Length: 487
Image (cartoon, one colour):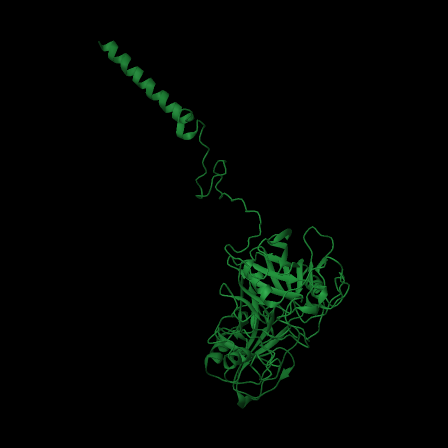
């Protein structure tokens, strides 16, 4: 009897061991597992397993390939919905898209779009000689500004396109590398857009800006009222950007006042005042000023002889009390301080690149209602070269350019594409997925030059209507350009 019980116990133990071993080695008989062994798991980060043992590092998911997506459910009225596209990768985060659009009347336009992922590439302003502080309003071809930026930084420019409007200086506010080159819109005292001499759009005058990985399109102050109303328009036009230091407003090279900090960047000052003066090292730029010396000025002991030079300047305030005086008096030699951009309601605070646009194309995820009312810069002309910028809901920046040699009739060949009017361009920017978009200068100013990582030389993909040629410098010189550059 004892032997039978012992034998039964041994059989039971062997059965358990067999089942345990089978479960450990695999689930070959488990129909829910497909008859295959389970994969080795990597539970380190909760992301999809890569089939490898845990090495203590997070698994990196595969990056989705780039593809063009047009706005779902949108049926355009100005062109056929079956837009054809060709994609060229210029570099990490930068893709050039050729969109072939068939408009009403079987007229073909090509809208070039440069999609920019600001996590991987950057957007900066281009000027002649890459100058920001002390810019003397010298024009240059967009490609020349790209060369000047590369020479100054050692970096790589993927694309260059004209930006703010043609003239003796740019029309709207302009910030380059954190320096306010122009603080606001041209103001000729007329704010009714119906008067073609007003130099204002039907919409609010728009700006495009970048700071690190964020970008926005907006007027200089937030919209409060009907932007078509001349009284509301006046607020946009007269609003100004300014510099901030520790939350205090700065006026560059202005008369000393007890309300603002004056920043002497060139020349000399021997004014007699009661207050504070701080000598700063400016050699590393406005975002990294180093305090060299802090002086309290007593008018009874004479005036301060402050003389700015290359690599240093003076911050001054004509008061011994108040917020500005308290801030300057709190500084010590060796402190690092930064001067940044400020705006009346804070919408542009901290932006290091701001380029002036003109008319709104898309606002708040809708085509701007003013596009059919615009009457400046040939807005309703159907065959005009165009330049524009937009932002999609995933924060991708899109730069648009449309070629039309028909505009001036230079070297027009069979197969050349036609331009667009503003309503057509606005609808395309919306169709492309932009929730915000604005118009840059166009006409003969439009020229798009690209150079990918694998390209030995740059090439012109949108020719200037001024010349009708593909020469990199064969275009109308402009005051500033929008450059897409390698991070």
